[in-house]
Length: 278
Image (cartoon, rainbow, N blue to C red):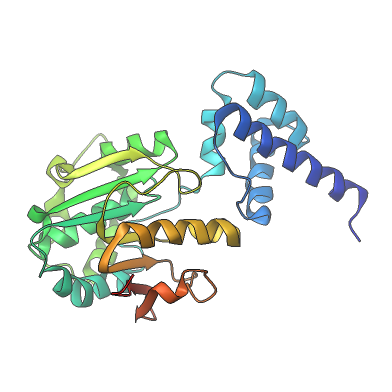
């Protein structure tokens, strides 16, 4: 049985999410409740608030508060070549298939501050596919998109990025792709010359292009089952025949309503291939 406090917090959470949706059209109502409670709790601590109701009041009445809240509501944890074995699998198993296409489109859904995007662009460049590829980098967090477009990262993250790149099968030195200054690494603007950055919501927006590869990792773990099905349906509709979908190592299509539309291409790395008849 739920405690009185738990019941009240659940009501407050529902009202807060409804208020965000009706006022700002960001729809978090189908996100995983446990994850939302944790992140909104962190926001309350940060702003010195004791309840979700107080947070709701600030979001509705204080200009600029919603933008600050997006930093809590959207997860911004990433690194270049995160899970190097995933990028090695793309390089060694997926790209040989994509090489047969005259032109390619890659969708990085939930691109956050750009680490996954740059990892993919560098991989495609090293495999000679960048010049025939358009990359779409999307996220609902406009601040994160601006960071992705800037391509500027803290120097103390480079050792990890470099080790990941090497473990992914990188064919050059990661230092070939950035310069340093003022304590930061600035990735070469040529890496984003073929990228379209765009505000896009997996909750409410539609498919915008036919793609051959969708990479959306460690995003859907924050969705409930219905929203996961919606996102996977979008990816399926976006992918061309025999296109590839990469999801996070903690995610699976096994229980998805769209599972029959995909076959397992690399089970360990959670890379799926769209069935040809779809």
